[in-house]
Image (cartoon, rainbow, N blue to C red; front, side):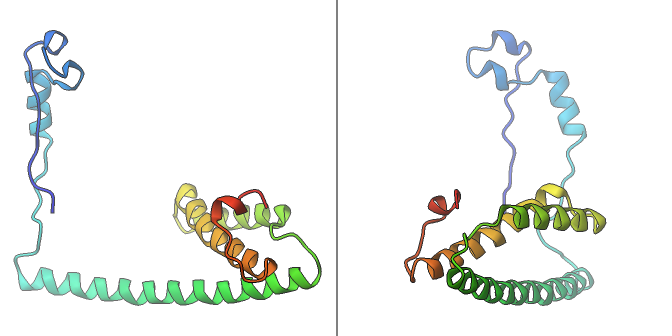
Length: 151
């Protein structure tokens, strides 16, 4: 848990001897203090704790399913890697990647996920798929991710 605040205030920050750019005026300090919302680091009542535990259990189950589905996807990606090796195809199929990225980002938007989040998540999953396919195409030699970015 993070606790505490450090604020540097000066009547005229432009003439402050140290860290002038991070100083705030007394008026700005009052505004900061007026807008601070203090929150409790943990629940004090059993009712709140129980509800949080219930919601967290739901998240844990969903997280397990997400990992399970990602593992299933990786197994299929490995099958694709073997197929590409058998047919002398490159690992990265640019048109397919662009299609996946657009389709998934649009689907994420429809589910109220930010495009940035969806794209980052997909890049992580796709990057691991490429890494695994690279191992297959290179006879089990692991390829660092930075070497795969151009494939």
